[in-house]
Length: 226
Image (cartoon, rainbow, N blue to C red; front, side, top):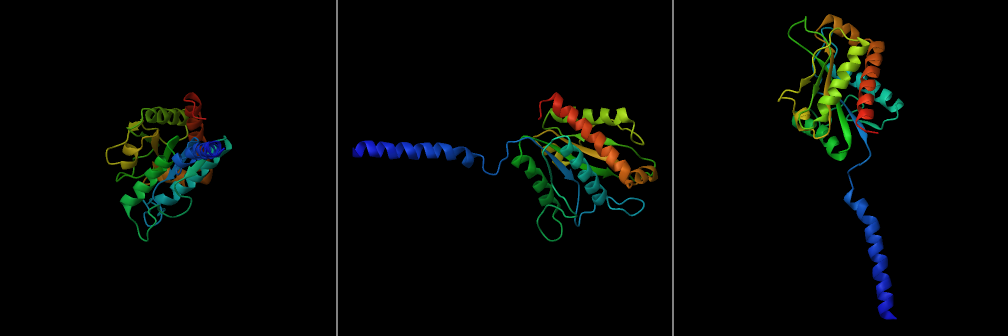
């Protein structure tokens, strides 16, 4: 009788452990598919400044929020690396390296994801203008999503100039260290009068973010990211 009781207790404990194990293994890691929207810069890091004095960080956030809303309306689970005028380093002042690493951590917490970094471009030449999309080198699907974005913008003919899809330069740490499909969109040159006028227009940002969402949606459907 004692042996049978001991066996029963052992069996109950074993079943309980097996039931709990998946939760222990997956703690801190989300397996459901998500789209991560990264509004570049923030807080003490203003990014570039437009010819009219507008900080890039503010336009990045406005565009990211609009893109997030469009993707959510399409049924996607979206998270943002920031939702207000802050950086992500968790400290007073600004620590660029920690901020970048914290943004990268989102892809580690959500390994089943796409990473979309939203920025505005700037140049010493006031004639440089247009939309550019860069892709990360760690995941072969990064180029595919960049091309989908490119063709979506091309089809709507909704930019002052559409620049070629490019692999992100070595200096762009996030793009070159993301293992999930990752792109960086430069929505326009805020150092150019034409682009600045477009990007400070809320209707233009909303329309452009919808176009970007359509490109992302097409990629997700084609590659079974649902």
